[in-house]
Image 1: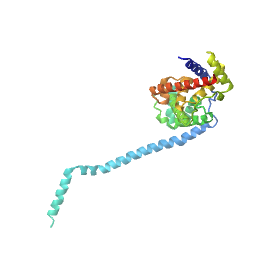
Image 2: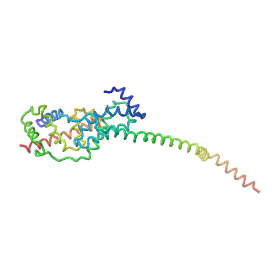
Image 3: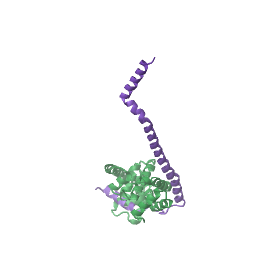
Image 4: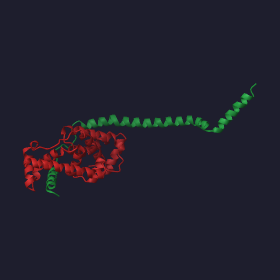
Length: 95
Length: 193
């Protein structure tokens, strides 16, 4: 360790002993402000988020249930053939 | 002083919306936050606002506290990161001039070059002034790192936890900041001589 480093270390050691003076009790009014900010933020935030999540889950379920038969139908090629055959028979047998 | 179990119970009550629990937590963590903010933010006029900002952040994010680390560690991390965001906007000065130092600090610099025992405990505030002047020239994150490491006495591991930086990044930044400090100090000495 060179001389400059030694001097810097001593300087830091001495400076570390100097603790800036400060009050360790909250200043007047801070408690109220923090509590008010928490009241404003948290309950609304929690309510908002949970409601949004519930809403999204419910909407997803409804969409899934309503689209299920349609998707099943469109992905089943056999049902298309049946429909085609049915309509052909109807057209052929029409007077 | 609250025990870990009491703090955990208080956090749970706070999450459920208990105002008394929130107040208990506030009084428990206030001295810790105030110390951290005052140590890492030289501009004292904004320190109180910043302490309040940290307290509100903690209260609003109680749900994110996992309980894996002690509550005050989690609070410290929020406080340090808030300070870091704040001091990012501060400018740094390119150099320290003897004219910027008080008479006592200038005298102390002179003594430091000749006497290995310079700075007894009664002179620690002069040393602090000088260190703050030297640190003022560093980039804000480096300044915060030097304060945490040399003035607050945190280990690399602790700084890594507080800042969220990797241990390698902490070491690299510390090395770079220390080199800059050395340069600035050498320059100050040369000007004096």
